[in-house]
Length: 244
Image (cartoon, rainbow, N blue to C red; front, side, top):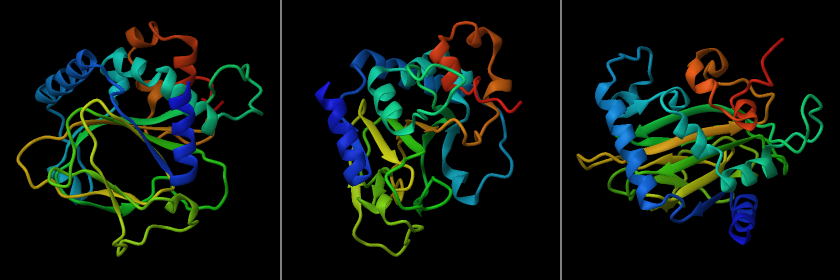
């Protein structure tokens, strides 16, 4: 489809892309209600978090909460973009017709404090090859007042760590239901949420199969959810990339 090709083009040139109205109103309401329900029942005290995360609302490991979160990442739009950038055509253990990229982590988040410019690719590098993408599915409108994402367009091609003094930044003012995808090398952060309202989004990192997952997904996934997954979804969660 044309819009998928445009997403790929935008990510290649600018380092990010936006698909408006990715979620229908019905699906948006479902996922927003589901996140709020899970968070309201969450009683775990996560120790060792960075100080800046203290004002954030976070739900870790969405893949373990409800299979519908996994199904969301299996949408044709996301699969086509991820396969284009992350597919290893030399991976021989499964047919190359199947996506062989994997889920690195999957959280729901409502930010509070400002997030300084950073990259999520761990190291900066030059070249056309992409091995990590961030997927943000927006559940509530985001602007500069409640903590929207900020980026330095084309910085994924800089081959360097972020310059936190950079002033020429783009504020991504996204609407509930939008999909935002970016190359993990791009310099990005968020503005401070100066409102008392939430700004929930689903945040996933998808990567090439050989990248170490941030969470131990294959061992922690509930058996009930595992049994309902398609083959492609099992691959995406890392079951064909487990260390022997």
